[in-house]
Figure 1 (cartoon, each protein chain N blue to C red):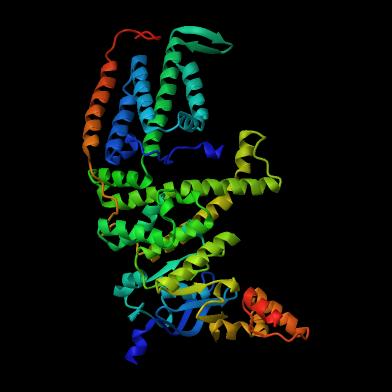
Figure 2: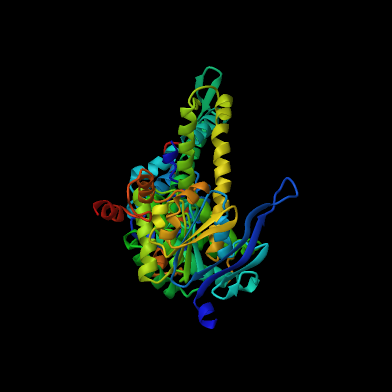
Amino acid sequence: MLKDVTIGQYYPTGSVIHKLDPRTKILFTTAFVVMLFFLNNLWGYLATFVILATITLLSKIPVGYIIRGIKGLVLIIMLTVVLNLFMTPGTVVATLGPLTVTLEGLKVATYMALRLIFLVVGTSIMTLTTSPIDLTDGMEWCMRFIPFVRRYAHELAMMMSIALRFIPTLMEETERIMKAQKARGANFETGNIISRAKNLIPILIPLFISAFRRADELATAMEARCYRGGENRTRMKQLAFEFRDGTSLVLMVVMIVGLYLTTMIQIPLLFPV
Amino acid sequence: MTMESNNRMIDVRDVHFAYPHNNENESVVALDGVSLHIKKGEFVGIIGHNGSGKSTLSKLLNAIIFPTQGDVIVSGLNTKNHENLWTIRQTAGMVFQNPDNQLVATIVEEDVAFGPENLGVPPQEIRERVDRALAVVEMQAYAHQKPHQLSGGQKQRIAIAGILAMEPECIIFDEPTAMLDPSGRREVMETIKRLNRDKDMTVIHITHFMEEIIAADRIIVLDKGKVVMEGEPRTIFRQVKRLKEIGLDVPQMTELAYELRSEGLKIADDVLSIEEMVDALCQ
């Protein structure tokens, strides 16, 4: 279950997408995410699917790996779908006891599900193709343009990169603790939500204690390696926009504008406009 | 005198250290008047029971903590002067026990670059240093891997490379093999010994495994915050009884020789390795 979480993981394949400047990818992902919320018909989602599929193919990341990332969010997606399906007022198309399904509900539920899936896929492609250090470097650079945040750009970027570094370590630790507690007779699989949540306490407490100890040791090790914040710090890898970044920026603008144009299509696809 | 001090890598002069205690006003004494010198290029092993103050000592040498009394001088610089701090940390690098908790970056070579980046070394030179450091620990093939996919021994070698890239004169190893399996332990020890032998690196090796320091130039034994024994491995390990009293082991072969002697067999009391044992028994 925990191994399924692919968000924030880096999957190196050396593809064109991997080689793009992180800033290009951050810019595109941001524009893409914003755009997702403007889409109002299935043509737009279809276009999004084509764009994402193309990027995925170019990135050479196994499709299964990306799908696994969605699996972890099945619960949230289901919840959104069910809520939207039954709670939206409008033209009734089916009745299930006290529950009614409306055409509008069907539409909103589909859009929300697709939106969530594309959101996760889009952002995970960014993290899968960008090494966390590149990603944080890119973020650091982008944050320089945001007032107030600017002062803490380095610190925030460092925190993020450490968080990403420790995701797999803490995952392993969680699994180890779970096994240890199971060996002592703990039960995580049965019972209602409240008793299950209660059963998580014997996992969370050791996990937190160990995380704090790790943080302390890491801080000492960083200080021993002369870390003293962002001042006068140099980087081995310098970010550099290259020709391919220029090309992709142009493509990017075309895609975003294209997506925006789909909102104006008046021909119905599956659902009435 | 000048010759003498030029040759000194580390000088610890009557150092006391106490950890402040939170609940009551009393503090816990970790070091109680320790004096020692470490020469350039030396391989010094430090052993001691849990709570003997050996980890405290290592942190003092790297200016992570400061003596409550006395002086620690690293390459002629007193850790008390705050402006020396970064030079000292760069001169005396430190490798810790838990390999997971000292790797900062998600990619091996970026982790090795962390130290020089902090020192403000120009990018091109960082690149060269990283490649060189990875070559020394024989981990070039793993430059683009993720640290959490490596074995414990490999992670620890990456940690060593991360220190080497800062170009220190001395490396303090604080129980670097304690969390490793036997093969990882061997990998790391071979790397440490090679650094001392081929690169002339001053090595201070704190450990629980006596076998790791039978080839050291000198061994310092700490107990209850004091230096209780100091000398060549042979001289130290010969005193089996005394070491056992402090709660320490001796190398397996020394122990065997000791037992054989107490059973009346005529055998030298300073056998350290299996080879020496074979020679001693075949005579």
